Image 1 (cartoon, one colour):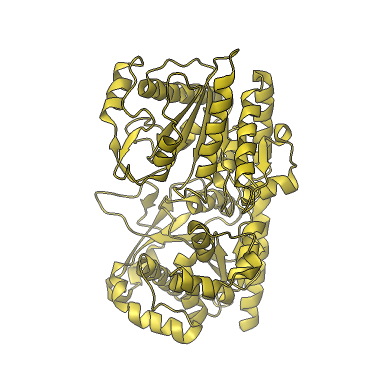
Image 2 (cartoon, one colour):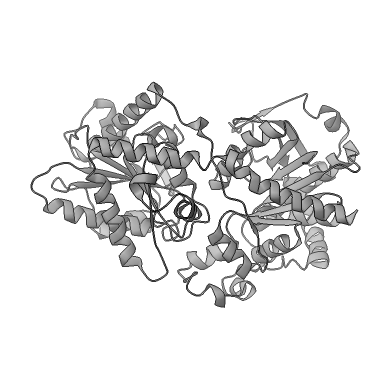
Length: 548
């Protein structure tokens, strides 16, 4: 289909959020189909003292190009492979020297595409410098290889790379361009500011809202990239509606897939689940001073710290409802431990908790038994504040315990010292009652690890499950809850009931639901979903061909 594909993202070899999961899992399928015809481009933000664990530099890859290439102001690049399944080629761009050209670049982009960089702030300059540097890499390689008549695609992810797409569009007309919006900057801002997105979608004007919310430059850049790309894509039907309204172009929907090579099989799965449960119960016991039975129901929610968008507010309220209901039961002492694994403004792992874990002490309740790491902003952290407001303090009489883990679970957090995936395998249920979730990797990851999940139809994954797999939780391992701008209380009660339903399952029933979850995950593999990108790439190449 193509001779060369460049894909540029801030999250290449740089694990920040969901886009890393998109690209790092998609890469294996791309490599299988187009061996080393795909080159990923990411930011070189690393140092000798803090090297990327995801990148291995090579002295031989593209060595002939590197020996002759010269970039403006001494910009440098490193060539190697991304340490993920498929081991694709990756180029990291050290873009810091390009800041001196920003005014000239912004003037050109205003002249050519009416991109308004005048109101830029925050990470705008950094993103644009990286995107510009990435475009220079693409330009240099295309000219060096003299690929006249070859089918070349430059694929850019998110507004942060928009400046690179526009540069390629202006100076490399022979290259087909693809732009993917994983979530519109203005749509996320509308939600983050507490405004109703869905009930009033048809009345929103993206440019007007950008002015109101001080998002003019990011929105202007994203809109220009979307409208000028040869093919414009997004990840779900729910985000496609948002793009069409706010960016004024209808995108192609390219759902996000996953790879099951992250999931252990057979005996290793059972060993992993046992190890995860042992660690989770150990930390809970050391924190709360209670001993928990092996059949304790373990629940989790996770993701970025977007309190409303990710449905963290709904999830905590639902747990409070479940606590109230379980505390009324007299014929059962089985408990639920819910872990909220959402990175906050972390200070350090708690020394007293580390000591209790090391000593094996589970008889003394620690001070502040709801949090595993100290944070810098106890007084303003939404999750911590909500738990205290509702009185979710892990009292001895409560049958629902809630533990806030405000740290990245990277295997070196000081308390669990296990990765997120290594712990995920031990849970009985996950909940992700999102309000704004363009796709939703967290519930997809959950079912891939055979853990049933609850999500909403405002998440792309939830919509896909409801549309293609059905709405019976026991048969698909996923409960998809209907959520709107105006049914918060109903959503809380529905999530609470969903938790109670899975909690009440007999072990054989839960295992059946677990197998159903993993079956659903197999329907969302990249081997099924890559065809949507093939369509987008074909359209882009046709557009580029028409320019020749």
